[in-house]
Structure formats: structure tokens, C-alpha cells
Length: 386
Ligand SMILES: Nc1nc2c(ncn2[C@@H]2O[C@H](COP(=O)(O)OP(=O)(O)OP(=O)(O)O)[C@@H](O)[C@H]2O)c(=O)[nH]1
Image (cartoon, rainbow, N blue to C red; front, side, top):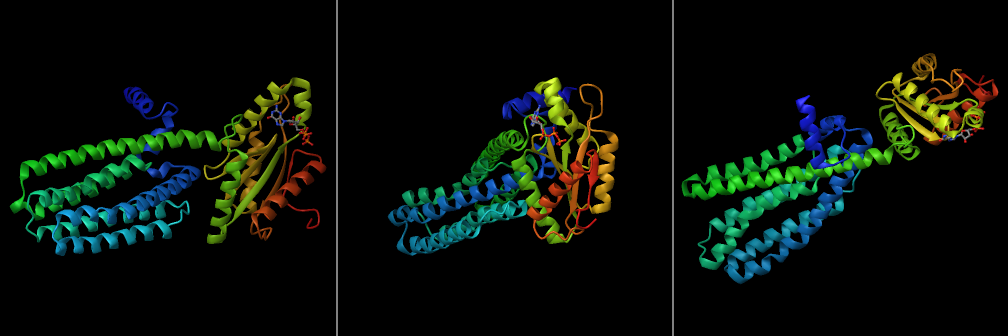
């Protein structure tokens, strides 16, 4: 009860549209639904590339300052280092095209953070081997700000709490290690102050990143759902189907599709009005969801037609799932009669489909066949094959 109230207050600070069930999604990536995960992975890689572009241009530019204050021997070495870093950033920018996979996004983030870390260590080793005075010493000290820039950079990535913690702990760990290695010459009070500041910036960066994720959660939820029934809209259904098709091809696994078209819906609308029709549509979607597995996706394909995507489901299992759906019922018509549907079923391996369009078409044809055969039934075999 108390935690509920606290969550409500906290979630309003992040985004007004957050719901109670969103908390796990903010804590870790494991509960993210497929479409959120994809969009987040694409956004992270694109932001890594934006960062890489910025750093690729700015890193060599800083040499102008180095030239003004450092001896030639030092600024030349630093320039070489900066050009190498810039080339690596350009490599990251050009070689990383977003694929929508979270693992790729993590890799891009790791490379983005690794480049300045290597630069930080190398430039410090170089600077440490030179006697610096007044102005050049002040510029040299500026190099120590790099970990702060890295920590602040986290704010532009929509990361969960656990992902933020991993990054924060890595940067803090590296900073602590640097302090430990130079402990004999270190000014401890100022190191402790800087360390505290780094933690603070990490906290602010994490909050900013999480609030971006919260915003994204609310936005994606609205974008991928059909407003009337709350199930997936056609656009997101097509995206899910593509992902499931690719996965089934990759793993040589089963994939079943069912077109579910409610029967005599026009008559319902004509007799009881559009409002009653809307209620029946919402009700039937709810009924179907209740008897489906969490891995299945129910899509409102159009009007009173639904598409059910069942990954890792062969023809026999799909038939059983549809039997469960029809036995549970699709709700009632306003006059009290049960709502029924004509269902066309197709399966990738059973039907030897060569493309997802072909599989969709098969399911669609069988749905029409079920209509022709008298409605309220499942058709899993084309006329020619029967
Ligand atoms: N209330 C409501 N009705 C809708 C919605 N979308 C489509 N419809 C109605 O669904 C009806 C579909 O009619 P038909 O395509 O003739 O199909 P049917 O009457 O179900 O007949 P069969 O499919 O042959 O069983 C039309 O009257 C549409 O107006 C919606 O969002 N809300």
C-alpha cells in the first residue's frame, strides 16, 4: 500500500502517463515488450552515433589549445592520440547501423565509453611524463574532466535503473582505481570531493535517462495499441509478424497465424448501434486474451477482424489453442447470444510457406472458406488440399 503510494508519487515526477505495471520496466530490461526493446535499441545506437560524430569532430579540435600551451614534443604526441581517437569515433559512427537488437546497443555503448577511457589513461600517462607549469598545468588539469563528461553523457540514453547502475559503477570503479594507482602523489581531499561530484553527476544522469525511458514507455504504449480494444494495432502487428517470421526462419521453428473474423457483425451494429458494436469488439478481444499464452500476440487487423500470431506453435498446438479460445467464448451479443467467429489458420512448416505474405494470404483465404462453410468454425486446410 505504502510502496504503491510512493510509486505513484515518483512515477508522476518521471512521466504523468506511467502506470503501476511500468515499475519493472524502469528497473530492468527483462520485462520490456519486444517492440519497446527494439525501439530503445535503435534509439541507443543512434544516440551513440550522434555522440561519436560530436566527439570525432571535437577531439582533434582541442589540439589548437594544446598547441598554444604545451611544448611541441607533448602536443604532437597528444595530436596523434587525438587523431587516432577521432578515427575510432568515425569508425563507430559509420560501422554501427542500428538493427534493433539490445545486445548490439550494449556493444555500441561499451565502445563509446571505452574510447574516451583509453584516451583518458593514455593522455594522463603522457601528461604525467612532462613537467608542466602555470597555464599548461591548468590545461593539463582540464583533461581530468573527461570522466565527468562521460558520466553526464549517460543522460541522453533511455536506460533502466540496473543498466545505469552498471555504467555508474564502472566509471566510479575506474576513477577509484586511478586514485589508488596514484595514491602516493594524490591530493586526497580534492580527490574525495571530485569523486563525490562524479557520483552526484551519475545520479542526475541516471534520473534523466530513466525519465527518458519513462517517456518512451508511455509513448510506445500509445503508439502500438489499438485505442478501442487495447490490443496491438495493425502497424505494430506487421512489425511483430516480421520479427517472429525472421526468428522462425533463423531457428527453423514453427509459426502459426490465425485470422479471426467475428460473424454477422454488421447485423449487430445495425440492430443495436455502433456503441454496442464497440463494446462487443472490446469484450471479444478481452475474452481471447484471457485464453492465450503470453508469447502469443493478438492484433486488431481491421474492423472486426483479428490476427493471432503464435510463435513456436505447430498446426496441432495451434488448433488446440483455437479450440481453447472458442470454448472460452468470445463474449455475448447484446441480445444474449454468443459472439462467434470464422477462423482461418495457417502454419509456416505445415503449409511450407515461402514468405510471410504467403502465410498471411493462406490464413486469410481459409478464413473466407470458414465463412463460406457456414461460419463459427476453424478452417486449417485449403479447398484444393482438402
Ligand atoms: N462498432 C464497430 N463496428 C465496426 C468497427 N469496425 C468495423 N465495424 C463494422 O463491422 C461490420 C463488418 O461487416 P461485414 O464486413 O459485412 O461482415 P459481417 O456482418 O460480420 O459478416 P460476416 O463477416 O460475413 O460474418 C461493419 O458493419 C462495420 O461497420 C468498429 O470499430 N466498431
